[in-house]
Length: 286
Ligand SMILES: NC(=O)c1ccc[n+]([C@@H]2O[C@H](COP(=O)([O-])OP(=O)(O)OC[C@H]3O[C@@H](n4cnc5c(N)ncnc54)[C@H](O)[C@@H]3O)[C@@H](O)[C@H]2O)c1
Image 1 (cartoon, rainbow, N blue to C red):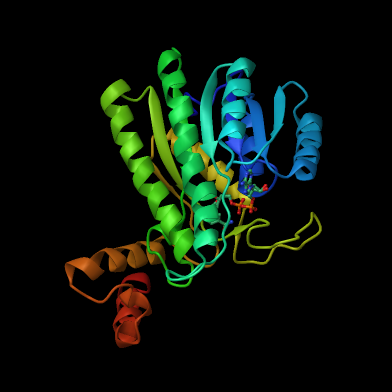
Image 2: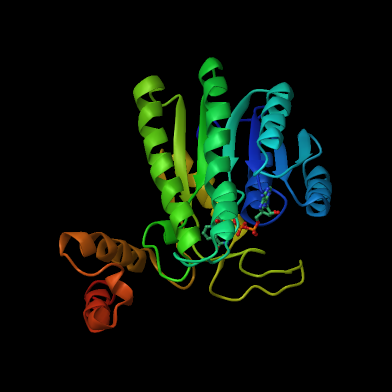
């Protein structure tokens, strides 16, 4: 049985829904009979997405909204149109960009990235939560995190920071929702692994061959629906390169940096390279 927010006839709102994971989630929830609002700044990709979905799911209502998550008026427009469309039971804050910026460089790039990856999540959350409270049915908010927001590998500081912020925000949201309405409105952090999408394969087309390592976006969408049904908050996706056990080791090592007073990001520190390799070997290969 699905999470009660994923139900036929209710509305799912998905940002960044034209391609990649957002599109896969749109298709997955449409297959459950949900009516879907697809929001994206890429009008031509949205057109393609909606045509395919209309062919596949003729009985489902689809609303396409072109807009940019950095525009507060576009987000208000999305909110208003979505509420007119039906009872919104699922909000998926998926749109994000992944452009590197070092801690001491690219202030404008940092601002844009945080506008897209963090502020839009907070804004939409704030718009939709009250509506979800006022409705009688179950509802859920899924925010897209990343392993880069947990183990925060070096070289991609702005993205890692944005995803760490989304993780904390979603944890806080989940707790506050639980205190206020029990499990009628829930929050979930979806953490994809390495996934075959335009983010990692810019310019990919239907004919682009998937390499072995990444998961497909459909696998991520399936994992989301499966784990929401089980009531999970952290919805973790491994990939074909790194197992769940390896990810557990990496997360444990990162948490232990502070407890053991190691240097920041010691996993990538040359003095700790052998120790980390042994640690992984002990746990993953035993
Ligand atoms: N692909 C991965 O390996 C991976 C791994 C971990 C987390 N994630 C997260 O999953 C989510 C989806 O990733 P993806 O790989 O499908 O991304 P993608 O780049 O393939 O697709 C992102 C979509 O968001 C839209 N978008 C971007 N900026 C926007 C804006 N300002 N306003 C409106 N729409 C905008 C794009 O047009 C595009 O349709 C992101 O939050 C990403 O950080 C992805």
